[in-house]
Image (cartoon, rainbow, N blue to C red; front, side):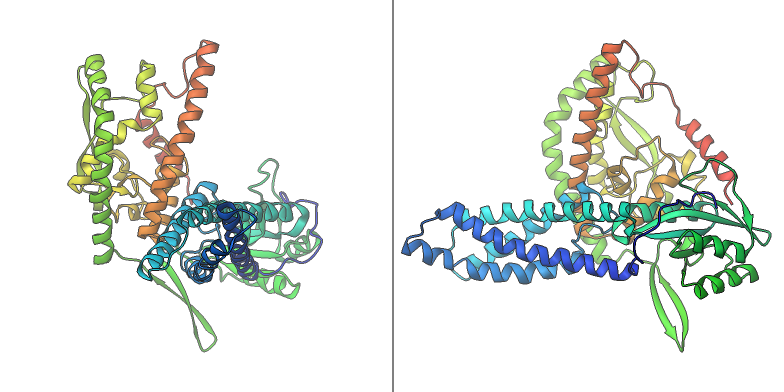
Length: 500
């Protein structure tokens, strides 16, 4: 079977759910232990090694705050899934989530100290909060590195996916983004007229082989496959039933992905009707409370950001007016429920071949999008949400992609902090936009805003290095060629025409 590697795991991997529960519990225990050490270190930093009687009394006053930290952090950890692997491992997401969580924890502790009229050293609490934040990040980075090492040493379940097309690609991406699952896709089987054509997303070169169910199972056993995942719209064919029965007899776990894939934006609930499993799909809706807090956040932060942005925009707009005769431009985009609106941005065409270095820098730093704060305050857009796209793209959305139009478009979003921009396909961005909609909350929006700052800082550093190298080499900087939106739309049409 093409794509199945020769290395074998040293021992049978544990079930995925058990791995996740153990990992989460161990990270929480490590957090609580570190909070104890952080409190001791904060006391040493504040009072030194030799504590006089008065300082001992002051230090003992912090012990109730340590107990409160254990309780509050356990609640936050469970409620917000702060193990660092929710939604897939990303260091910037981990840092932003922990920054918000530790900030909320310290705010609660300081508020409790004020309300109880208890004297505590504020400097010691500041040291405590900084040590907590740094230690929590190191704990999660260490957990990620341990999982990576364990997976490379054969500790991950070897998985084969049965299916074809978009769903298989989506499933493989999600497995790769979740190292805590300890799963590794080693092959893909594509059923074809009662046989299974083996192929691999990991090693696409070379022809696949066709084999029946019995031959496929024998191959699975020879290659120490641990789990078979069915990702097909029709899983009840005689060949598939035969394959799954043989796999279960040989000790190979069998899982399946519920269909249809277009029901992606749903919260699944498994019910047991007298031994008959029924998967209930509930579509998350925008409640009145969600609309209220999201609009309040847009007005509050949008106003504050506008105050900061105006002094920056004025000289940029003056420079563009001098260079191009016009500082701003309006572009038609489709927003909530596909309704068109005029989106404001600086008059910079990033796709123009003759764009100046000044314009390229504005585009690389996304400063061209700052005027969209006006759209946010007007209510056409939100600070966080799927990026709005032109009519040419939206009119060709599939039903699956149209789900990203169920909320207001945003200045930034999950797809953008993942590095996707206007030139990427709508399908690529939809995967992340729907993931955002499934976890829509105030906490998520604040975390994404913090991640946006990190993304822009990283992008600007990379862009500056690229411009410097291109300048030294005497070549035209990458990204300045003329690539109209229509070209991307045309490419997406061709790709869609070949999807199953």
